Length: 58
Image 1 (cartoon, rainbow, N blue to C red):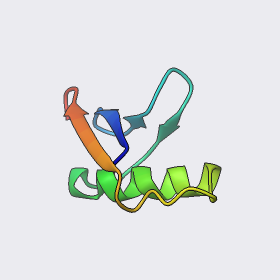
Image 2: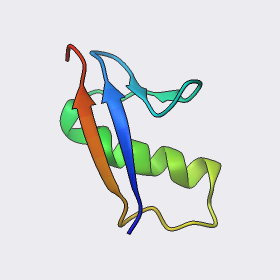
Image 3: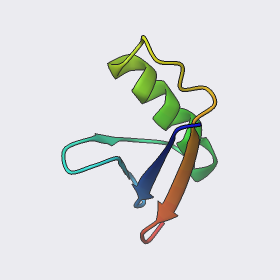
Image 4: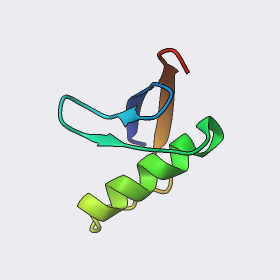
């Protein structure tokens, strides 16, 4: 099983140095990250990926 760690601030989800997406609600962050990963790499099934959300001032 693959995983990714996301740093969440009030308005952004940061997946790395240059990768940022947004979520309206922190509860939606994991699914938003999976949707983003599906967009940039549609050949990989990200539905079972574990998304760890680290809050930075949310």
